[in-house]
Amino acid sequence: MLLGSIEAGGTKFVCAVGDEKFNEIDKKIIPTTTPEETLGACIEFFKQYPDLAALSIASFGPIDTNPASEKYGYITDTPKVKWQNCNFVGIMTDALDIPIYWTTDVNGSVYGEYVNLRNKFDNPALVYYTLGTGVGAGAIQNGHFIGGISTPEMGHVRLQRHPADMNFTGICPYHHDCLEGLVSGPTFKARLGISGEDVPDNHPVWDIMAYYVAQAAVQITAILRPQKIIFGGSVSRPAFLERVRKQFAMLWNDYLPVGPLDEYIINPSVPGNGSATLGNFALAKQLVEENK
Picture 1 (tube, one colour):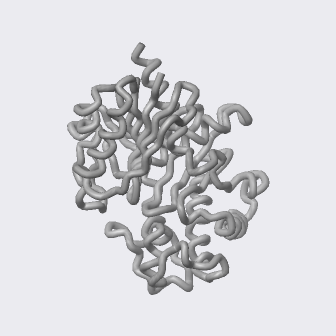
Picture 2 (cartoon, rainbow, N blue to C red; picture 1 turned 90 degrees about the vertical axis):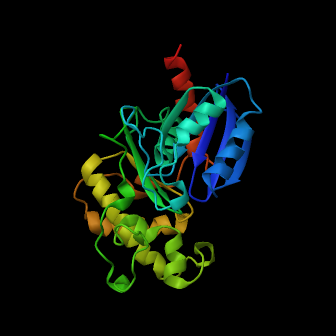
């Protein structure tokens, strides 16, 4: 059985094919440009595998995941103008004619972490944040995603401003002072005029951003009480997470036990930024089994 995965991010799409044991057979990275170019390249990649049984897509959003909606399978009101109202699932279904699982990029990642950690922990309750071009989070409890009429938008929670950051206008065009507007990768350029990879670990901007990420960790700890909070994405370098843990300790103030912070607030357990690909393989396989 061959399984397909698309991790659709704001900068790149990671397409992969794996077997039923989730071993990766082939992978292609495609730049995120226009739907015509990017999805066309994805279709070309997967058409090399005519025996593909199912595909799981974990996409940046907002997306419509309500099967009863007229826009199910669409990327909806994204700040990426060219991708607004893109019928992602419809385009891929028409081209490949296989079952498709459709969810957010962070749900794909949290499911991959769940698959990787469930042998170590009994049915782990996890939250996964991606801190990258955008910011989002997915949560899983009892093996199921957390969500209501649609998937959560945890990257858009409002935050208290750091005293040294009062003059920065957050980059989110909708909220400004939300998590994505204050800590996503493009904020480095907006604040400092340089890319995040060029900012040294000892720069004070990391303390500002850690303060915001720690607030998000406090919120999700109080609301969902997960076993682990996992931070992936380009911003989540290990030295940064250490700052987040220190800020979290001050903000949480030992209100309820969460265990050792270096085991509670962590980087992904799946190596090589592979959480979403693993999660997609597992979700695609689940789709095949449900359709038997």
